[in-house]
Length: 323
Image 1 (tube, helix red, strand yellow):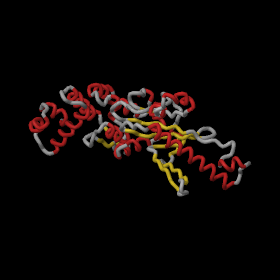
Image 2: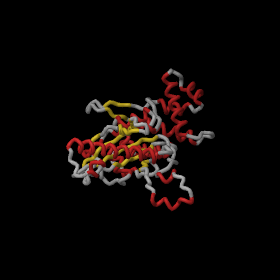
Image 3: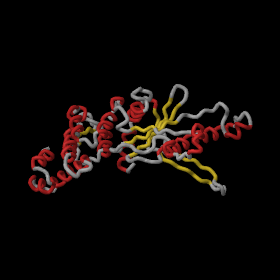
C-alpha cells in the first residue's frame, strides 16, 4: 500500500470491532465468528533464519499490515490482513509465504520450549523438534483490495502455474493456495456491522457519481457523524483531501466528521465530469476539479474568475463554495 493509505487502513483496523468485522462480513458472510473481545494484536513482522549452502545464516523477513490472535475455548487462531490498492499478480505466492513464515515461527517457539524443558520422548521427536501431540494454530489471511477497478489478478496458486500438458496428471497431487479476496464487487455490504459497510458501498460507486450522491442523500444522518478512523480511511481510499469538513463534538470530547455535504459535492462533480466527452475517469476528474475550485477560492478569486479558469458554470462554483 502507499504510505498514506497504508497508515489510514492500519489505523482503521486497529479497532478490534473493525478488524473482526472485516472477516465476519467477507469470508464468514455476516456470521459473527470473530468477536472483538477475542482479539489480541500480534507483531506484524515475521522472520525465519536458516543456513545457506555455505553455512551462512540467512534471514527472511515479511511485514503484515494487520495481524491478531483470536483465543478460543482451548487454543487460538491467527488472522491477518494484507491491504492492496492495485492488483498484485503474485498474491497467492506472497500470502503463502507470509502464512508459512507464521507456521515456521510457531514451530520454532515449540522447539525452543521443548529443548529447554528436555521433554522429548524419543529420537523422532528430538529430530523434528516437536512432540507427537503438538499442534499449530491455524492462520487465515485476507487480501483487502480497495482499488476502484476490478481485481484482475490470480485468486489461487493454480491461476499462475503453467503446467505442461504432458504433466497434467500431476495436478491432483499439487497443493493449491487460495487468496481470500475482499473487494467491493464481491462482498455484500449488508454483511458488515461497522463502517466497513459504508466503505465497501462507496468503493463500489467510485466511478458512478450519480449513484453515490443518491446513496449519500438517502443516508445523510448516518454519514453526518462518523469516527476519525473512518474519515481518514475514506479520505485516502476515495482520494479526497483536506477540504472535507471536520467538526469537533465539544460535548463528548470526541472528534466526529460531518462529511455528508462534501461527499454530495464529490458525487455531483463525478456525475458532471462522467458525462463529458474525453473523460476516461469521471470520478477522478471530478475530484481534481473540485479541489481546484477550493484552491482558487482560498486565493481570493471571484466566482466569475474561477468559472472562467475551470471552464464550468458560475452557479456550479457557487454550489461548491457556498458553505
